Length: 397
Image 1 (cartoon, rainbow, N blue to C red):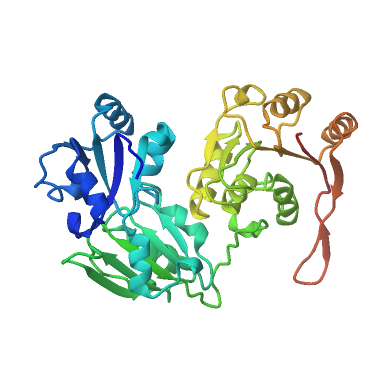
Image 2 (image 1 turned 60 degrees about the vertical axis):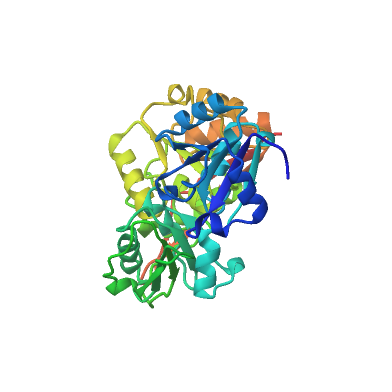
């Protein structure tokens, strides 16, 4: 076992008795033990100095810095590196100074209680995060394990399921797993009425009705799912646009001229932990984008009020840029300069002026220039042609 000054120890409902002998020896040898409210009493018998977690992460890091190089144990629940404090600490300091001691996580315990394979489900957390972000994972036949944010969270998730045609989905709330007070509540989303403990794990098996809303993670959601005005990028064009923007885990998109936010929202739904900044000078459009983001499960869409190119100053460098409105030579130059290596840029044009600029950019930058033309048949079989879109795309090398 590495000889480090900081040990982050996962602990379960069974306290010290559930630890491996080597891990328990580390806790017993600690000079300082830091724990949260849920860890009170779990290590009171030890002689170490006991400290509470500060409320702010910045204060926690300052506390740890002040304790170095004393032998410090920080108690966490379950696996410290799975939606827990350990991962954040590891990003803020040298990982070589930390030894992690994982315990069975709530996900593993819940999967065992449900008889579900961990390889065949999604693990999510809404603990201290917007509950709406789980909406993006509501799919037919999906199995979800969710770390919740309080006693009221299962009822909110039940409402999300029911509103989208998944009211017949079985739900189970599991609390205090592995302890003497372990408890379980079962029911259906459409009739959920249990009062549950504040700290719990929710298991959902998504069952879709015939009229359920289908919200795939692949790009190309129906236009009808968005509050919109004339700024909506049509479904077919949006699918092509997102395929060239290539959403990837943790990547950041600048959506310039975001309008109702459709491209930014589908970007954030396309891969885990993607981020997006939507830039638009109109408050009504930003309000639509915020409402769409909430309804479609990406409440963390960041919206910026401002005109480009000035509104781009100070933003974090992007991994992808979409210009659907406000295209100009200055905006293009600034966005292209800010784009990270291997970043993707897509520009869509519908006016003759913007088309001329994209043809000029194509001659200078290379990339791919295509014209997208979409026709849709109405209920009577008549065809309606949407405005053609000239699209330029390129990968920055």
